[in-house]
Length: 342
Image (tube, rainbow, N blue to C red; front, side, top):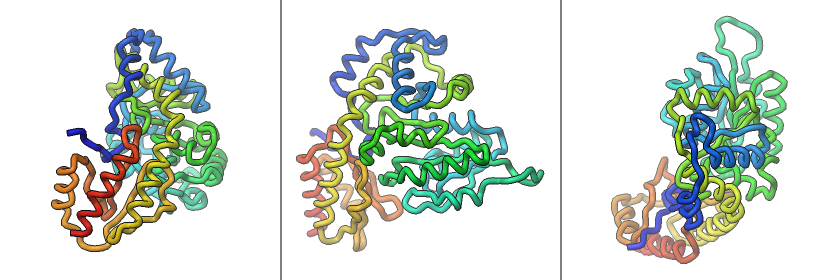
């Protein structure tokens, strides 16, 4: 059976060109800094993300936690959204790895009010307070929405006024740029560091990138080694990453169009609640309007050769990617339509 996998855009297989690039990659020992393919990827990433330097890391989770560790001192406070990936889906790593505490701001579908952030910045030198060490933003947000650039600009300006750095969880920052119709650097200019994933929507089998100033990346390289992220002949992983940044970023609009097509089909089904205005990138979130027999729904998808994640907090998510086209979407909708009729 040819499975349709819409659990995430991390499930993609590498393209044929990526497999060929991995086979032919020139490699060296990256801990010594002599893997030429890794160096090429990092230089390309720094240029595309508008930063002085970049560093290849194993995962997006690793990249975010490495940023916290590199920006902050132990006991610092990090301000970020209450529904962001670092809070919800990184296993409490901020406490374990960087030794920081998280101070959350209520999120409006991923957007943070700059004034709410300003109220949480620790001003003064009271010995009872933790020091504000970092502000974290996320764009595109893991709820599939893209955050307006004016909000990011306001947040970065107030952070600079207080001498606090800003880190951008940009796991899908190229999706955000595609949605906004802008250069990705128009987004990343509002952050001091940025993490982006090569394996979310860009089809690379492994890897993420952390970018920032030359001094920041020098410190991060040392911390990457401390965290166990120093890799050896990593050029075989960097080679598909180069294609991810140069080729796969150019076709993300197709995934977005397929997500909008899926959303329109689902919205037409009785028993499904969905806000099509929230479909900014390649994610479609929806809810069921009546009690759900979850085991039977999942069994119906499995029988049709479709892999899905169960609902989380009452919302189900379907994610499009380069291996999901209109035919696959029609099959998904047909399974849901039959389930709802029954």
